[in-house]
Length: 266
Image (cartoon, rainbow, N blue to C red; front, side):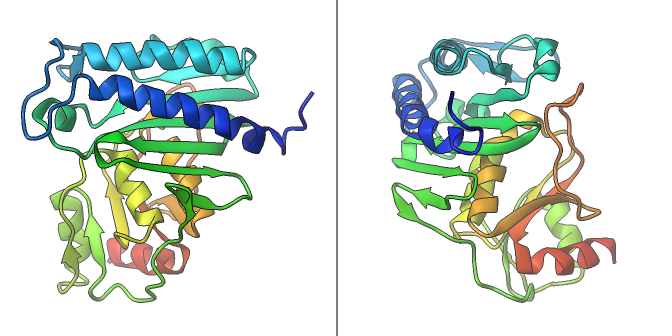
């Protein structure tokens, strides 16, 4: 039996292989700057889903469950099995985060895989195969981009910080910091947070109603890179609840957290 603190690092190489194969599977249906070749239909509520989402989800469910049979499961494309609430270990998966981007040939989508222990992320992988970029982290071991250690921005002020997120949310921050830099839109929430983790963007904003599968993997990566994902009260994010839905959130280097909270409340 592997000790719980050793489990994430022991699993990581195999989970990385699974994430990379899932990315290759998705890429069969992806065409840069063109519409996907995958069949498309609408879920309840009108959001799109493709045969690529389903194929990747099925692949991940089979292989991650084989890797850790005792773990619960929560995925955007799988009917929720609430037995996960009784499990100490839970996989949190988004087979294609940023489906609308994927549909239209925008490269900013990702495959996100997170593992929780006692409700907290301990392993996270965000694979952006259209960019040939894979972000990964395990608790206490640092965060990496394509095998190289990475860290959040060293910025200590918000005056001209680069900010990615929904326009109305950015506008609220800009009332306090009108000279901030508006980063290009990043449709995948997992990828948006991962880019804060690598320092490519200073701040990532997330609208309300994000789900666990959008953020859990990237939250782990950001934390190990020296950043934090938090709600507007500055509280960390809770996972594997009955309803895995979240309020507005912000992702940033730890040193910017208090300034962001003050600015958004102003």
